[in-house]
Image (spheres, rainbow, N blue to C red):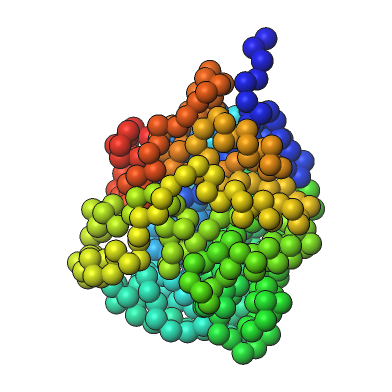
Length: 401
């Protein structure tokens, strides 16, 4: 019997769910669900990683209700889509891969024209994403809206478990709906959901409690958080330690400490070459192209890439929580996988690297000195709304992946 060459290829356990190795495909919006309907292409996209040996893949951006979709082509966790979602999940599982669903809500950040009225978030104001689409403004959620949002997460969790998902990942980061409540930069409320960090945590903790009650104590729940939003008045690294400690105390099974936001500081999330050229290449809206040309250099500066660029800050969270920890951020070689696990992390989430090397686990098993061919050029980021779906344009044309 051939010995295992890297500790990342050993099995792991997540609240009773056995994963055959430590690799999890990170959630990305695949753009392969036209009008919210799961497609064969979406299944084939995830099957590629399943056949490549990944332990669990994450279906990106599963909106808990229609109002939670950034655009009308995102998945909605609703009975209308039961058959397609069930077939998607089973089709991936048939290849020996577990499936996690990333529960998301866009809050005030939307260009979903199927909405009735304005998008709603923690605070009213400008709708940055929808501005070029004629959806200029967003409203603040009322207390009744917040109660309904908690119910939407609960109902979505019940539905997702019933169609066969193996785990759920609640998205608390990257500037989306729950993060808008956590951040003092986007939460200007004067009620019990605004002001102190304790108040800003109130909705995320209610959501976690509702999802946990819906799926039971023995079902894995992960949470993705932003350790820093970048701007001075946003979430800072010290804040994220308190946020993660609160989620851990509330019974979350695993935390995924990421960085930045999609709205203000995406390069903290990616690092490497600016995503601006790729965004311009695929942006069809003329007004948005003008905005990107005028403001893009400031919004999307190139930041030096180095492996494991989030490790030191993520270790600060590792030191204060009891739950499992999932590392994300620049893990791209056999040596970095070993170092991450040696630092006390339990799993590794991969995004860009898997787009370039979808059979990474198999490659690692054959080559103990594996290093990804991904150059972190970030061209894949621009394909997030490509008709071919998100892909690495350097090594694949979309359909091949």
